[in-house]
Amino acid sequence: MKKMSSQLTTLLSLCLLPFAVLAEDSLQALNKMSQAMSDLNYEVAFVQTSPTNMDSFRYRHIKQEQKVYAQLVTLDGEQQEIIQRDNLVSYFQPGSQAFTINSGYIVDALPAVIRTDFNKLNQYYDFIKLGKDRIAGRFVDTIRIVPKDDFRYQYLVFLDEDNGLLLRADMLDREGNLLDQFRVVTLYIDNRLRGLTDYLNKVSTPPFLHESKQESSFRINWKPDWLPQGFELVSQNQDSMDEEVIENALFSDGLFTFTLYVNKADRIAAKENTWRQGAYTIYSKVIGDKEITFIGQLPIATAKQIVQGVTFLK
Image 1 (cartoon, rainbow, N blue to C red):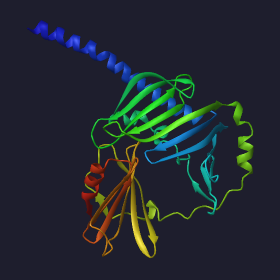
Image 2: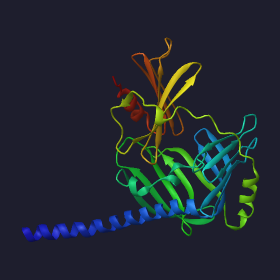
Image 3: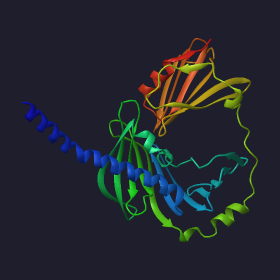
Image 4: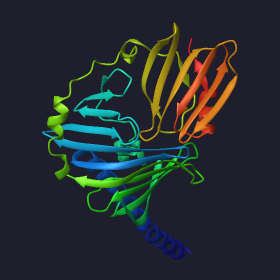
């Protein structure tokens, strides 16, 4: 009996070994993608699609003398431009005053998956290699990033087989419905980027955006009693709008983020509101004399559980 049990254990180990190897291969491929997106010099034209909208962009990225320079430009309608010069990101939009913020990357229109530390993420997600495909005329490796719980969404990513760059990223709900898609149409490496740094350095730096009351001098007096595993408080701020104080706290698991807003409830405010567009959920609920609002990329059921668990500290 013991011999049979030992043989069964050995057989199971041999069966599971390929899955462990595939998971390790997927993690290495995802880490290669993060490194490539950060270190290579490239230009991509891409389309960002949600169930109700589609926009096209051009993104250029160059790393020179350990400094990052980047440019994101809209290709439809009036031109909007965002430029990065190392840790400064400037926004230029028609009809609005240009401004600058301190940031190490451009976040607009680009999927969060390119800025993720997958070594920290693998305790909350499984990385499943699905095989080969072809995007923008290039062969790609396809990997599914699946949460180990039912409280968040999943990703399907397509990575350039040669250089590791992300060529497509589909954000999907648990049923596999498309919520948001990043899809590269054209890709150029190195030779199309001559002169980009000269151009960006010639652009005048707009004034810095007035920042909210930051974490160093402010602490929220409330907290969510429950969060999906891996989510942590990233920042907390206090803003004023029409003489009304609004507190907010940003949370992230390294892939998905959401923000909670707390303000004094209006007498005519609805007790509960729910709205979803694409990947974004907005859910608000009045608790006592406070209105708590969730905005982020998580399912509605998760948003409700987080908001309804908020408690105020004495």
